[in-house]
Image 1 (cartoon, rainbow, N blue to C red):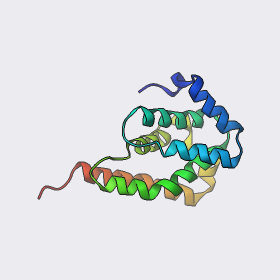
Image 2: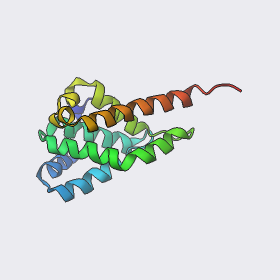
Image 3: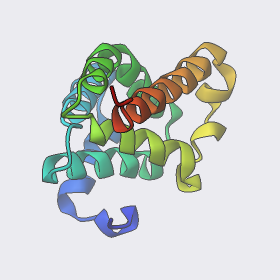
Image 4: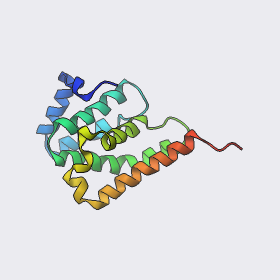
Length: 145
């Protein structure tokens, strides 16, 4: 996979500028559109996953980061669990994004003030990720009858 630093061309930077300079409502609509495109492995999922990761590195605004995470939890939880429970298609883009945010130190996700101060959010995200992993593992290794 390409590095986030390699993705700083015009279309990505246009979105980054929109996120930086927009008000809360417009930013919410943009974030909603981006997160709704995280699905199975394809170019659209690749584009928006990397765009969100780029926002976490380029936009030095914890309010924006928190808005992304809160929208993610609010809107996608039920849909993601429904997609994980069935055999296919899995929400690959969402799982990949969560994995990168939690494991890649470039994003300093666990150092974000909103993450440290909001224990409810931290617990919800941790539970969210662990539940995804359990369901994905169960689907990957079904018990033979």
